Length: 452
Image 1 (spheres, rainbow, N blue to C red):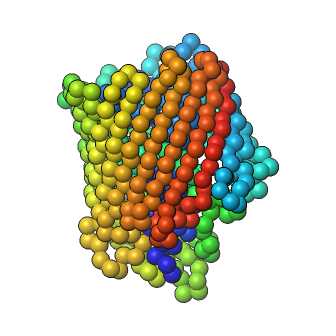
Image 2: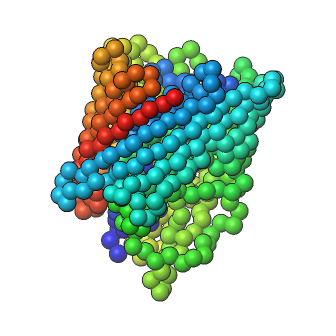
Image 3: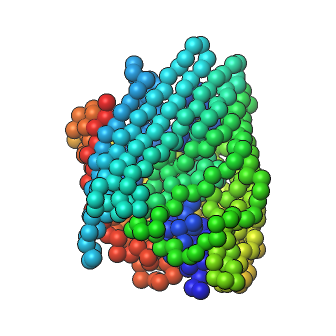
């Protein structure tokens, strides 16, 4: 079996992990910020000195605005109506997306010290949409929790996600929440993260903030259904799932904020968001739940017109595959570094890089190389009183020498109505590259959105 078809091969291709399921098995793919201002100190994603920009999926910016605005506006309810169209411009040409969605967000403070957050989205896929036949419609509840606080302690219980880390290229420390990988080229981490029933406790003090979570039963990544445009999985699976019986997850982080930045240390015992895959003698594949541990840190540091950010993680007992699709466990060390330059109030330049390393790699590991790298270059320009946002990006990954170029534009007609236009251009000449299976998915996309 070709190595690019074996389990977990995209875990270590950095960029490819969250953006496409390439190769042959969708279970390779990996990727909300809490909306209460009291929680802002518990996530390293919320206090960047220079705001980061969403890419590819316009709802990234919309979601962020919705989360923060919901708690601040006079109305606790926010409704978003949207319609999306995308077209594959390279032969064979066809409509990829043709869908309408309704998103409802509700956030409200109750009594003296209770806060309720709800966030749900319903999507209907029209006739030419690639998910119409396989799914028809989709309902996603990303948040449904209640929070209470007393003194310097905040407790959240319910359906939620835990965002860790800095990188959009790959999950370095952002391994707690599973991701929705059913669409190609979606880097919106808030939208990608899937909520789980969890208990989260945040403790704030002058020496930093401690956040602890417990998840009684881990969930797994959502991957493309058979018959959709990005399903390359041809395995026959056994109905039973093997491996770890205890699906609980738990972990903690400590974060300290300084004048010019912050640093966060994290540790967790987790169930891999992807099933490990093992080939049986009869040609069927068994899915296994695999536990691993992670220790990591992330940081932000602002100086002059720059922001430097990074993160690193040591992951023990990650599952990989041999050429015969048998499972082997290895340790991995992943590292990320990004530099952002605010050239002016309307122009931002950035470069981000990742290296993912299997520390005890050997030739037995066929599903991933010893080292893989990803590089992101981006430019963001605001025009027309900041109503027009233009972003140009290029992702590069190796081994495999894949490139993904993106042009994204959004235009705010007024406070409620937004229009968007995207161009996505993947390129690869290497059959073993993560983008090889989707190298012809050169797309143009349009979106109209109304919020009230």
